[in-house]
Length: 211
Image 1: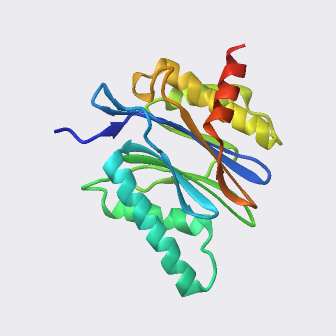
Image 2: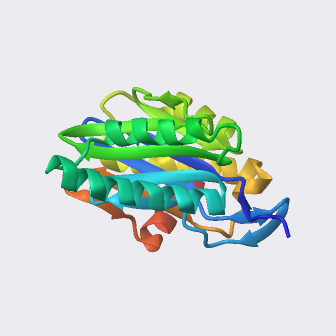
């Protein structure tokens, strides 16, 4: 049986004192919709989260690696490792396996003293965008929305709405990112840690976007 895939759209937006991650929730077997409630944003510490696109199994394994690595470094260093250090570790991990790769595209968001956002590809390449990024099969549609509507010094609430709008655009145009039914997960990472928007609040944003 073919391994479960997530065509997926994941989005990251960085503001002055926060990071917003958003992702659709649909997974597929090839082009067949398999699960409409797949979690694609995973907290890996109380100040970092990873959004994943690609094979579900690979994404889960990587998430567990990172959770373990963060705990180990906290013990070794006596303090929380920076999100940038974890991104570099993740890049090395993926590059070391590039000939038998993890089939993933990843966005890491974190906040330790300042917001951090990175996009990591399956070969371990790391990009640290100034403001926003997207990964997955719906990336072109999401980036089109982000590029046209992102504003400097964006407020947290506006960034959340923009992230939802970007994922919604890709869900309508990219078969693998889902149609109207699957929901959207939204995580906010700031000085208070990682928190997820309630599904009802995401639905309110989606309804407002349709007006």
